[in-house]
Length: 252
Length: 84
Image 1 (cartoon, each protein chain N blue to C red):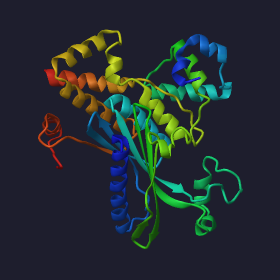
Image 2: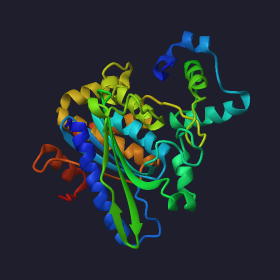
Image 3: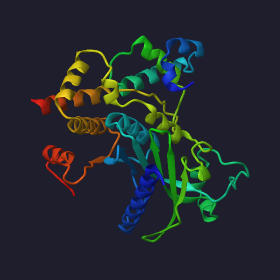
Image 4: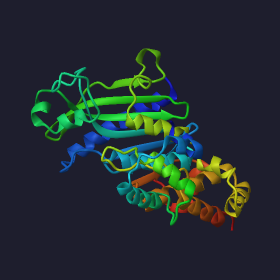
């Protein structure tokens, strides 16, 4: 199992637990917000909460991946799934948007043509992608989950990315192919970037990453691309110390 | 053609634009907002007109901005504060 698929499955399990707790609290709206987890190297660095809006979340991911120099990103969101190979309403192959269209039709849902699901997709800079889809049904305040369906682009037997595609995958693989802000800053001309390089040389790499992470979160917030965010760090690490110094809190 | 290749001016001119005049003002305003800028260079406009035909699920125009000036400002300020 690759690191990417492992992380995607972990986030999917965490979302299942969140979903159970959220539905048990009897909210008016049972859907979860969109969640984005970012990883750099071997470490998780941040988690973002975004509105239920695919395109705003993609904008946030685009900026966060470049800003934080993330090597992997995992996005969790509510979606629709089906066990039908073709669209039962048309008898033809599924087209983009048709599952959510049927999802708004109570008759189609009652017939089991489509079913609500948690979708968790992971992407890395090596163009690998993973999707975990977990169908579910809500009865009162309880959620009953199906077995997860896992599709890996880096698994020869379950190739998905090359055959599947789609807008979100295209957008994320494109975002993951772009250089990070730190990489771009190394070659940009002008006094601002010269000063930046001098300051980065004065501070250690861990401090530079911490400040670019903070700058990215500040920008995401000011541009209203996220609802909230958490910076992550290993217990006892220099990064944890910097988070405590800057924000004065530690939720470990 | 991949979006990143659209930054080649000659390629853009060869492919032409896919934005009509009615859309252009909207696209320009959106780009300025996303780029956190007040004016567009000729290169920006050429790139913008090429990529602006791509729309999202709600028919909103998709524009890729490679580097956020706001992010750069915050980063520079945080670095300066850390050093002083």
